Image (cartoon, rainbow over the protein chains, first blue to last red):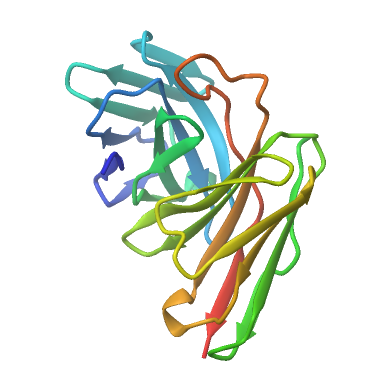
Length: 110
Length: 119
């Protein structure tokens, strides 16, 4: 399966700390995306990084991609309680098929 | 803003019932998707559609069918619901003008989800 795997499964930090989540995948990709899901809600797109990019920033988010290791990381700097959510990576290598991992559950304590 | 609306947030059905899950998007997207989400398994693709009346099986199509009669609407049908179909169902859409050779490049826009319980 192409499905990405996030690590860790759960992460608990204090407000103000940085949160790092990792994603590994198995086959070549065109791009990798990160999504956020608040409890019981739909997913919201955060950031997309293409296979020829190594790093991308968006506000407090920093994403890296290492295609040789088939891995990506999402860094959330200066976390806030409102960042509490599940975070998913999604990869696409085949037309129209996005593969999601099982997510990292982030808890940011105030 | 793109809006993807799923008709029911919560449904409770009995085994053997026919279930319709409706999804409507208002941004004229060509592509629409149905996923199911289960704890520990992430999101798994059931079906997707890249045009009206066009559909492709995802990774777990068994027990499901879909209908796309209009561009904005994509329905998921459980012909005879079973308890193992108890799950969160998520609809998503994406525009096709971001497709490049080798695969899509655009983001998915998700609805709020429909939590189905089959008793």
